[in-house]
Length: 134
Length: 69
View 1: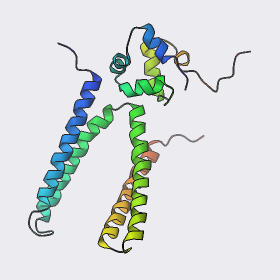
View 2 (view 1 turned 180 degrees about the vertical axis):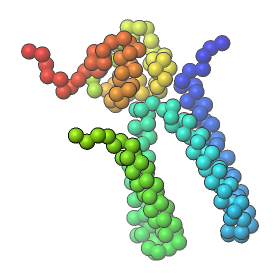
View 3 (view 1 turned 90 degrees about the vertical axis):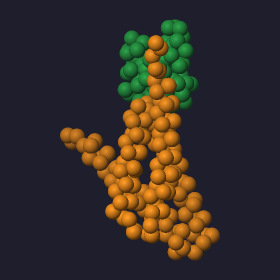
View 4 (view 1 turned 120 degrees about the vertical axis):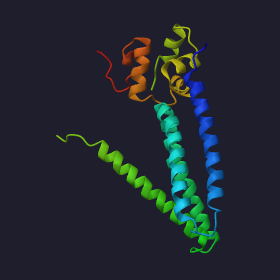
C-alpha cells in the first residue's frame, strides 16, 4: 500500500477546513435566527463559542503542519492584505456614507476588535521570546 | 539566497515533489527556494542540509561571509 504523502495530507486537511468553515457558516446562520435578538442567548452564545473553538482547533491542525515559508506567505498576506483591505473599505465607508451609520460603526468595531486580538497575541509572542538580557 | 538545492536534488534523481514529500514541506516552497525567490527558515535549511548530508553552508551560500584570501 502506498504511503500517504505530505502534500496529499495537506490537500485533504485544506478541503476539510474549507468544508468545516462552510458548515460553521450555515450553523451560525441557523443559530442566530433562533427567536428574537438575545432571546436564547445562553443557548446560542455557548453553542457559537463551541463551534468557533472547534473550527479554530481544526484550522490549527492545518496551520501546525504548514512549512515556515508557506506560513510566512499567509502571515504577510493576512496582515498587509487584510489591513490594507480594511483601511480602503473604512475610508470608502466614511466618504460614501454617514460616518456614524450602523454599517460604519459595525465595521469600525470589527476593526477595533481585530486590533485588540492582534495586540494580545503580539504581547504573548513578545513575552514568550524573553530571554536573559546581558 | 543563492543555493545549490536544484543541483543536489537532481544529483539524487529526485523531482521537486519527491523532495517536498521527503522533507514534509510544500512543493511550492521547494520551487521558491530553488528559484531564490524566498529564503528558507533556519530549521528548513538545516533539514535540507541533513537530508542531503552536506553542511548547511554548502547548500545555501552565505552572502555575508568574507571571501577567503
